[in-house]
Every structure is written in structure tokens, then in C-alpha cells.
Image (cartoon, rainbow over all chains, first blue to last red; front, side, top):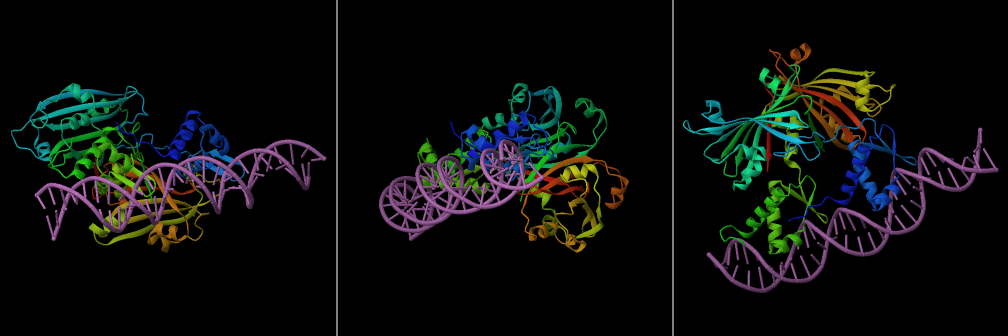
Length: 237
Length: 237
DNA sequence: AATACAATACAACTAAAATACAAATTTACA
DNA sequence: TGTAAATTTGTATTTTAGTTGTATTGTATT
């Protein structure tokens, strides 16, 4: 196997952060002094300072010269629900992520789907409707179309695991995903499946995923629960 | 172990790539040093470097002189640039990008704005409403709140140019922007200002921008024209 | 002759620790 | 109430080890 590690100061920063969150520290509450933190984590004070600097820049804490370092009341909800890349929509931080396959069928695609997948008239596709939950609560509804030709041995079992891992193992080389983010109003069906109470606007990500050679292997529509799943973006200058 | 068809460095590059994916390495994690990789794959360091160079050009990893080589979290960052670099994008594609300042006033902020900016009760803020157009057509409406204390000499003239350039020139160090992308239904006022005909859902980006000492210097809401401005995202594996 | 790869040496840079001291704030005590 | 001492963050410098960057030379293969 392989070792990938975070820089020490980054590890310390993460520890401090999780400690703050775990302790549910409130606005203005002081965190241990730099010297104490250095002792606690058995690193030098310089490393602690570097870690602290990161958290200051994130807005989680602030420090006062000669006094101490304190938790910001206005802690920016930070990368908890951060939009992750491809597969790992919900990282390990989440509680009990689970999948529920609502539909799985081999069908004749509509013309628009055929166009998206760039396939011929007589080719069939899998249609998969999958609900993704965290803590038993529905978060994401995904509709996915996959050409039968490419994945003749697709099964419900596979889809309960990671779809992309399966594709990787088949020797395909996933390359890019072209997506379009659109705001929509949920249909009644969608509202029912995501347990939405009111017809508020929500986000839909429409995407095509390709292999190295340009083959489009998936067309999908992903619907995000408007309250429970928000899109936090962090950009750096 | 190695095939003979592909160049060795290309094979090594592929191997590193799959290892990174297999390990589910996250943003900022360090991969083994070039020397170690050379040992692991039993090739010379030069070959490793060449492989690494390929992956760097792909954007999968980046290396820091004297420090190490790290996995880049570029998966999302590309998206963000699309959101952020609006003027640049437009100036390339469309003609005549322009700004129109609809409102510019020094006011007492509401409590929610005060909280976002993390300022006291008696501090005033600038409120700026700006319309951004391409070819004379409104595309984006931006509402921005800036603490008066930080920018006592802000003017309409400045805002017609690049706001961030102005801030840069003042010697401030812009660091990060934390944003939240939300779908909304436009108000009547918003519909009028963006020349919208129907009350379709649209996107709103709510953001706080910070200096590198954590000071929040701007709270803004940006509304995107739902038809003329769509969000294309490209993510790579 | 050109290309791909290996081997080697060294330069430039970084992370982290260790240390010392300055500056601001808090605390203790007269 | 003042004032000095203690505490805490801010800044600077030095050292050590480790990593990437670069240049050069050698060696097969085509």
C-alpha cells in the first residue's frame, strides 16, 4: 500500500478544529494557550502557531495579542457539506450514509437520453433511480442512465456499493464529468421521495461522464435536498 | 512488471494516478517522495519526475519545492473559478461587459448583515447594488455589504472598476471566500432588474470574503440570470 | 543521430524544532 | 488605585533534516 500524509501543522489544525467542535465551544471562549497546545500535541509552538493561523484564516478562531485565542461566534460552517468531487459525495464525517435503489431496469431510452449518451436507436440503457440517505434521512435522489453495451453485468448489488469503483475495476478509465447545475422546482414525485414539505426551489446537477477515449458512459440527474444539503464553496485567491 | 508498449514514465504516471485514486487521497495530502516512489516502482528518480510532471500538468497533483508533492483538490476549484471569474469569462466570450451601479449608500446594517460581517452595533456599512451586463443585457445582480471602517474612501468610481483591485491596492491581503450556493425564486424587484419574464427558480451565491487575518471584509449576494447564465462544471478524475 | 532511461551530484527550498526576546494583556499585590 | 510581575501572543533567528529542482554524464535501443 501507499502512504499519504498531511503536513504536521495541518494535522494539528484539524485536531484543534475537531476539539473545538467536539467541545461545542461557544462564542468568545478561549482555547488553550499556544504553549499548552504544543505540550498537548507534542509539537513545537511554531507548528501550533502555523496550525492556529490556518484556523484564523478560516474564521473559526481569532487571537488577541497578549491575551489569548478565542472561538469566533461567527464560525463559518466549514466544509461539512462541502460539495465533494465525483464519488465521495458524503465523506466519512457523515453519519450512516446509505443507499436505496428505488428503480433498476433495462429500457429503451428516450430520444433526449440517446442524444446525451450518443448512442444508436436500437441500444438499450439501464435506468437507475437511487436514493442516498444519511442517518436514514433522504438527501440526494439520483437518476442515472448507463448504456447496456458497456456494462452488461451491472447489478443492483453493485450499485449499492460505489458505482465508480465498479467501473474502475472493470478496467475502464474514468476521465471527466461535464455537468450543468440548474435550479428547479421539484415535481410532486420528487417532493415525496425527498420528504419535502414545501415546493421550494432546489438544485439539480445534470451530468455526462466520460472515459479517456471520450466515450460517454453515463448521463445522470442528481437532485439535492434543498435544506439538508447545501453547497458550500471555498475559493482562495 | 512493466509492459513494453507504453513509455515507462507513462506507465509510472498511470500507476501513481490509480494509487492516488485507490487510496482516496484527499486535498492536500502528500504522496511519497520522488525517491521513495523510485524505490517502490524500481525505476530511477528521473523517470518518476517525468511521470509526476504529467500528473501535475493534468492538475491531479502539485509539488512544492523543498516540501513535497501533494494531491490537489482541484476537483471543485475549477467550478469555483467559473463562478468567481465572471468578468474574465465574459470578456472573453461576450462583448462589452459593463457595470451599472444601481445603489450606493452608507447605512446602518441589519442584524443579520452585522452577524455576517462580524461587526459591532454602531458600525456602518456600505451597501452597493450593482448590475453586470454583457452586450447591454443584464446577467448578474450583486448586492454587497462592506464595513465603512475598512474602506473609508470607497466611491462609485472605484466600484465601476474592479472592486478587488481597489482592495488589493489598499494593501489588504485578500485570502478566501466562503460561499453558499442557493436556489431561490426571484422577487418582483429582481425580475424587473434582470429583465426576467417568468418567475423561474434561479441561483443565488451568498458569500463572505476574508483577509488572511480572518477579517471578513465583504458580505455579498449575487443573483445569476437563470437563462443567460448557466453553470457548467467540469471535474476530472 | 535521436530518444528513453539511469546514475549522480549539488543547489534551492521547506518543515519543524529550538531558542530568545518583544509587545500586549491580565493578574497579583502593595 | 497603581504598579510590577506573570502570562500570552507576536517576531526573529538559527539549526537540522528532508524534498524538489537542475544539470551533467552514461547507456542502451531504435
